Length: 609
Image (tube, rainbow, N blue to C red; front, side):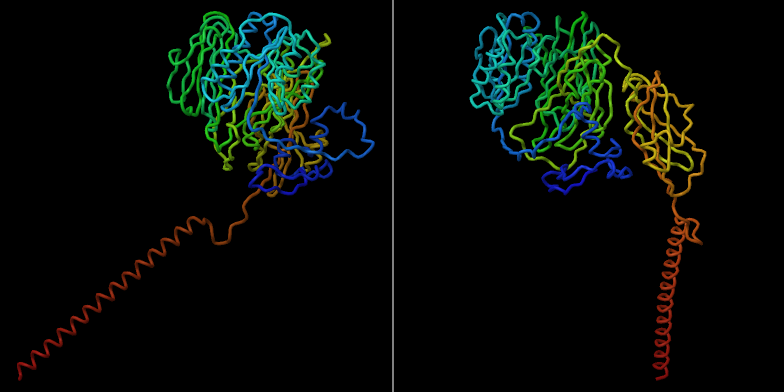
């Protein structure tokens, strides 16, 4: 859907040099490409209408003068440098300081890659360096960093002091990473020091334990798993692109649970195979070597009501095969409840999209009606469910190795990305009614005079619940159906009852017309909820009826004629062989008769002599 000149595919297989995006009047809606199948719109429309806030776009004013020429700086980090800035102020007492220890321990033991450099800074009324930058070159180095983690909380929350100390420890902060773990309740003016930290070139990740965190922090989350007094069961799929240094980490809140983990081949791991850190309330299973690919099942049992969290981490299995990764972001950072919060997720392997991925999201919130998600590769909206958090975090070995170019069938896989935070402030009124989400995977096939349609069921509200009904229309004209859906020919759907969101819908229809050979038809669907709110028109599905041409005269069955030809050749060959054998035998008999006659005459001559 764009004008481009092809790049060198040996170096950038999935990239094109884009020179212009086509607009609606230039877009070819009948082209059988992924753009039409998934989005059905011109690229210009997707970028400047569907992917931005239209109200904000209208308020933009054109530039009064040409923009300045762009400048670029290409940098490559030789070694990853990370500083953990940990809040140990008085408001972190109790469960918060324990959760901080658990999170930091997991990061140091399982997440950060070898040869990276890590430092630790503590902040409260004052800021202090607990550990200078240390190279991760052994398990001993990891454990020494873990031992230096703070265990006591007291004092004020001087966040600017901690940030300044972390930047000072790094030296040249450009490309330097800071992980800021705090309750977010600053007692100083963080808004005054945040701009200088950002301008330093450091990459700052902020996690907060409180819902009253400073607005200067843009990423806040708290990871918790299922809260139960019974079994906590599930499955994690480990694919062929990962498997090295795989670990299962279970964090419990109160009492040590019973843990059972089963490999795809049936091997069962219990507490006897795991390490237990009583002080941090964690249970860890480290799988030696390369983990067996397939579905790993876990069962965790607790007899008292408590929170349980399972996190699975794994690194790339081969240096030249990039793992599948997922990147996420929110469509907005603040909401008043009038618009759905959308999580965009991009699933890829070495910058190439993974098309057949089933994507969902989880959200820890007390307002379930804002739970919505969308996968940009599929233009599809999926439901966010409040479920337990199960993570596979993939770390690329550093430095980046050469990429294996051949596609790899990885089978089932699981990936989790912890995305951005957002704030919802409700006005007190009920949230608006959201229509069913748009169907984006409609497909059609013509068999004789019957049409087979397939699609994924939408929900009552976007992708949640069950829609009330479907409206299906068809046309000989694609553009008419797209821009004037109600003018298309209607399909009788009285016998069709929508299924629950994300179910597979498969239905056949008779259009009450004779579909001639060579005919192409276009189909589209709209869904409706109980409040008569209609979804956007689905993608346009195209189906053609193509019959083979008439058979040549005298040939009723090509297969039978081929068989007859083979049999005839065999008969002729056998007949020729018979004639040759008969001729040879006849010649031998004639030669023998002539020889006998000569011998007889010779004998008679001798007798007379």
